Length: 100
Image (cartoon, rainbow, N blue to C red; front, top):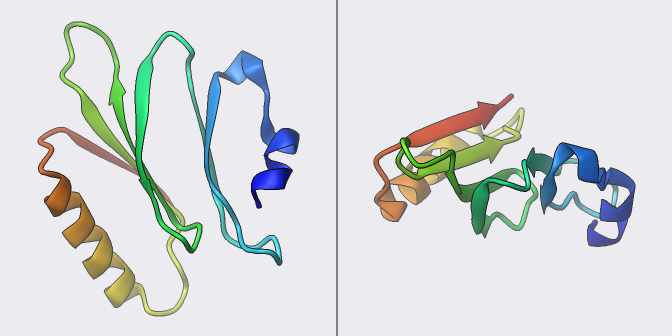
């Protein structure tokens, strides 16, 4: 939940981005981006399983879509189909997908 973010904040790691877990504290994603990197939150899914941000790693690298996922154990085919459609809809060329 959003109110639990205070427990995750650790400025030495960078700026915190989250896709909040549900009220039972299941699911949820947290990712840190260094303060000197430009990052814009693009989308978080309401189930706390996907966080998408556009990150710039420096002048010589093009902006990269950073997609952080926490895949479900059930209904994976539908989950990845929806994720694929979401990524395609953002029309970005450089994509980095992280997660489990």
